[in-house]
Length: 118
Image (tube, rainbow, N blue to C red; front, side, top):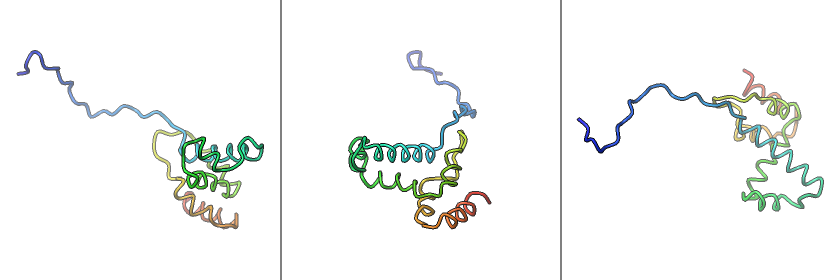
């Protein structure tokens, strides 16, 4: 029996609340990279170091995010068109870093298709 002054415990439930669909993190990062590049081109910021200071992140992190712009335009389009979802996506920034270092867009596309479309 519970003491009358103790708070009552709620019965445990195995039902988890439904997760709300979210924009994939990789989409948010690519959008950020595109915006930062626009700001650099427009002269709104002078350097990636200025972006890092403003965003309160390291210059290395800015470089990592901006590296997504080295992906083939077709891959960027596919990433930007990913739907919102409540579950995790297979496409991550970390995996894409392997692909963005490949200078030939055709080879990038082959690598992307092999990783995500099989």
